[in-house]
Length: 176
Ligand SMILES: *[C@@H]1O[C@H](CO)[C@@H](O)[C@H](O)[C@H]1NC(C)=O
Ligand SMILES: *[C@@H]1O[C@H](CO)[C@@H](O)[C@H](O)[C@H]1NC(C)=O
Image (cartoon, rainbow, N blue to C red):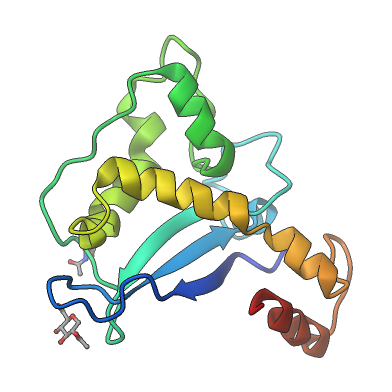
């Protein structure tokens, strides 16, 4: 069952209620189940071993009509420090690229996922969350929302075989 869950939209955060100057009204925090990603995209999956926790996909600003995209031209600023790379990778790994070494982590492909998420989504909340804040805020959200724990509260764990009803009920716990 858990293998099927690819992306789970955890919560819609009303962080920015109808502020006149901002183009977005909420943020969707999207996490993914790595095994599910790799089962659905076997040819893209480049991580071994895979994380056994839900990892960050992104933080997506929306405005009730749609998820906004590509809002400003602000370029992605690559991390320059391997330790910073590792810290972000811990919760926000790019499953479509292998882990780099200290020697080659500067190569663009090792930050291409973060670059993509920033350019496509992060730029749409830039008026409120400049780039460094966008990334640190997203990591903070992942620290505060362990989906495996939420599911465990509903008696769902990796390898278990819940009914749709059980699964829906476990969603109730995530609302708290
Ligand atoms: C959301 O954004 C789109 C594109 O910018 C715009 O066309 C639409 O009117 C906006 N909707 C709301 C509710 O602000
Ligand atoms: C935003 O940019 C991405 C990457 O270039 C592209 O795939 C997507 O279609 C663009 N979205 C919009 C609404 O232009």
